[in-house]
Amino acid sequence: MTNPTQQDLAARLQENAVVSKKGNLRIINKEIPFQENSRGLDPRVKDFLTNEAEPHIRRPLEIDDLEITRKRVEVNNKDLSNGISTEAMKIPMKGHDIPLNIYNRSTEKKPLLIYLHGGGFFERDMDVMENICKFLAQEADAVVVGVEYRLAPEYPYQDGLDDCFEAARYIYENPEMFHADVDQMGLVGDSVGGNLALGVHQLSLEEKWEIRYIGMLCPLVDLSDVSRNTWNIKHYDMSEDAELIRQELVTMKDSLSFIQALYLTNLADVYRPLVSPLLREDKTTLPPITMVTAEFDFLRIQAEEFSDQLLEAGVPVRHFKYKGMDHAFVRKLGYYPQAADAVKEVASHFSEVLRK
Image (cartoon, rainbow, N blue to C red; front, side, top):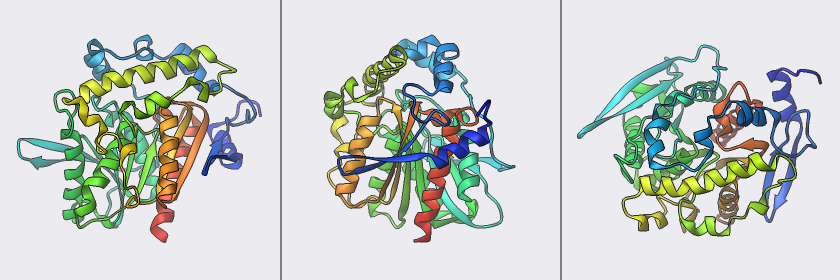
């Protein structure tokens, strides 16, 4: 098709998924629309990395990059929702407040999704993720609450995680403020937000509430060296766009050491399940999970290992791999059709879980 629209591309993604197996793991592969048999980067990703991405982003992060990265406004996405409302409030805590962004609150009580943003534990990414949250709220017909947790290195592990947990507690104890059905509560996180979502679930096991679903978008599930030592670039098809792909993979791999040093004051904590959920021994208590991965993401391999562990623990997992995509592609909502498709898959699985 010549010059397909975003709608054409989105429809093609839904129509041409191909299932493959990696051991016992069933992977739903979303091919590049209208280029289903091609290899390498999606042309939209290749164009962005070649012509638009800032050079300092595409090398391993260093401490001098911290403030530059924080000040960078990178809202490279569009609002695809139809009039979804946005509100803000703060939860008063001892010594600080936890800002919340509330999407799709109305007079009607709806299911609840708590959204935990990415950004390496050190970036305040809710501005970047607002359009994603609005679209998720629309597609899931849910109230979505985004949490502005405290950031490293000023607030290292476990301050930000505690904020996410306390936000969940506050919403559960005050459902009328959000017009939310807290018996239908799920979590969604992108990148390190997926890590935090798993941590919130683990911390909540002794609480009154039940987290019924977790959606993870290119998540970081292991900050230790356990999965990094088994990672190999040979796991990726480098037959096309090798230079760009290698740069993306190596940059992410090496940047994890920077993130680790920012987030942890005691590096031995890297082996705690709240930091590296891949190392959590008992995964049987986890709810149904949607795992969204990108073909050319360094974190894809550890996510596949995590999904395999979920299957062994008897946890329902729906695992997607988006061909030609790089890390955190969902942030390009409105430009990459795969971003909207991934949000729709998360919303659909969440709604399906609630019906059971």
